[in-house]
Image (cartoon, rainbow, N blue to C red; front, side, top):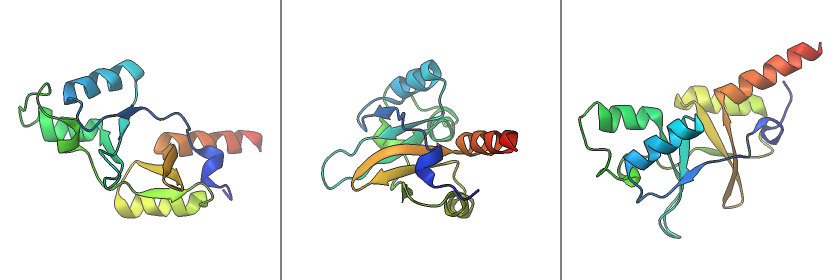
Length: 132
């Protein structure tokens, strides 16, 4: 591939507060037709997290917990695995495979600036092959 992460990342990131209800997250995920939300840090000592459809299904719905009362901060995954925007895509793929994750967030200094998912990688590969 030879590309850097910034060339294939999606800069549009949907965010959610750690104090929001899981129900609110479900509404956002369905409305936007997406699979994850970036969870904002609670304070300077906290870090970003991610809440995924998988988190919600297995940690809330499958356990018959009330999505109206469970907070995102209780079920989100932390800390995020992040890469810099100049990371080679091949290195990103190795991280995804080694950690068994479907998305990696892109960080510039202390700010999240994008995300790369399996779909972004597939899309990039299809476009590259179509050019040949």
